[in-house]
Length: 509
View (cartoon, rainbow, N blue to C red):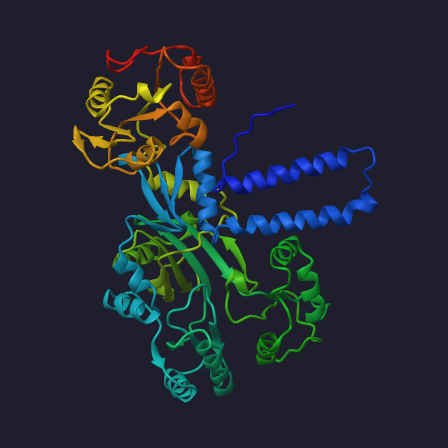
């Protein structure tokens, strides 16, 4: 049997590798001599080998993956222009994204957010609450500043990301020195700041609106009055959430290591203590998911307007269009001006995540995009190279079909003005047109290029076929293959059977 398969992929080689592996697997499993017991090891080895091949195509971080999936669900065309940088949409309607950095994110905003001290300096000038802090160059300086600020304090890299090397709630000189040494291993710029008690929230702001709020808690256990901390931790690791974490990372992020034992010691506990029912014991000093933390979704409607306004003002102050704001507050349902709050970090490239809000990436794309981001495209398929129109003919045909721009191997034109020189292929020229700020376009491609390279876009408002009466059997077969490939990408059923007139009467056919 033969099947036509259309699969959205980042790199076609990854799909080919997977389909080849799957085909070989099916042949082996369906063989009369197949034995699961005797051949399991060989199957597992081939599977692991496939995973090694696929990792070459792995996307960095989580945002790109979720944005691509959302674009597929919303039927928005996507193209990777350089590694980790994507364009969503076409022509005048396209938007650029690099993770959660958009084409409207100014470099100055990214620069400001890359430093906690710069962020705090700027926000404080706007009257936005931030922790008191200072930079230190040695463990001795860190201790002196901690004594000045008053314990507890936080030690962290000024330029760190995702909570790396952050240690909060430090209450003595020994822990400050240890935290400084750990932070120095990650950065040459270390901050000591006043620790503020409260709940940790991440609020995602897009174009002056809060679109998602997560309540973050450090990894730990909750007492039940009957089991030891060690037993509670072992039970926590068996929950579906932490089992997924272990499967993804290969190890547990919750263990009674030195950090955990120090935190328990501050509360007067050890591994064999039995905490009372309902008491929450953190075994990590930071709340990040990467450190074993937990998170829960907060309904934006339940948050006091003053708190929403605070993080929106902070985002505007940083000149950012999409931002993750880390806020410490005791109760989001009450105004920060009543209860107190501080913004501890602004993230110009926030990890939004799909936890408890699977549609958030689609919501972000829908806000950024104009509809599905498509422009009207007419595709001219030429049976042979003799059928290719020259520049004048192509521009005349474009005008007659209400196309603002035209692309062929000889170049790209917009509003009758030549924008580029020639390209190696019409496919490359079409891709260039789709990156240009045009409202519509005519794409001219030989049938052989479509068969060899594929389509530069996945949908066309019209397809015109230029036949050549002198075409040989090979050219006719190639055109047939190209039209078969096009059937799912244009609105007219059976268009491939219709021969359109050539754009110039001098052409044969």
